[in-house]
Length: 389
Image (cartoon, rainbow, N blue to C red; front, side, top):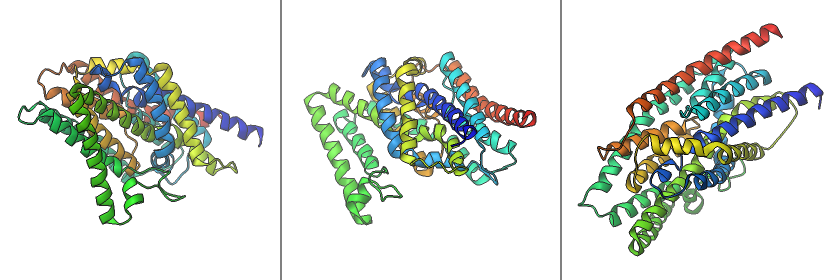
């Protein structure tokens, strides 16, 4: 390998690792267990430990779709050069790091998408309007869908007419049905993915049967747990939901760090299996979660809403569903947006959720501002660099 090519790989890889660390410290590392921490179901440090491991697994098993979308579908008519990839990753990671150390959850997907689009347009590429429409639709609907479902679920759990020993196992069954249809690399063909329902059930009738059996088994197991100790059963369900969301975060967020690297491999003879890249990106997420996530976990858990176990469960169910939908569609999405919206919706159901309107306003401005700022900085820096060099 030539010295220039090696140096390019080292620089791009370093920028990607920094981005993965920043994501693990912020978006994927801080948000999945924040409601559980807010409900005192798990400590901050223990949450940071487990979210790192689960994020690594999710990145390796589910990260391919979003990685492909970020790397090859955000700009048409051109392929990101190594220099453009380095610029985009460095700017995005820098903005996310600023959010981590100032205590405001910058939307990672917004910064990376903006930075990649800015660099691509600076290279002479064209806007990918179809993909932008899909992405913006998911981003726009997420607060309403996530917050709305969380609000409705929290209201259901507060109704005295519906005993928690019935409502919570029923919700667990819904989660089990979703889990039976989540796609994993290990369950699919060599060049694809598969779910438990498709692997075990085959055709549509079999898939429906597997889904119902799996949902019933999950609901039955939690019902038995709650008959033994209702509070412990709630806590176990809450922790299981946090684990599923953490796993989903890894599958969604690793593509934001690895996607800009894909064009680099298209222009050289270097071949690295995608699953190896995904594992490396997942390891970067793990490092970020273990070293810096606790600060943001505390910020999300305590500053946005005072949650108990029921409202935390209500917040995490739509978070898991939305995350898996985005992974299936190959849409980069911010976990800060998902979790914060769901936490606010669940808190509003009680009428005394302790939501900080001022902080929410600043957070929304930070989300929009990070998208625009990343685009402008990436476009300007790449244009200036090419003019000088």
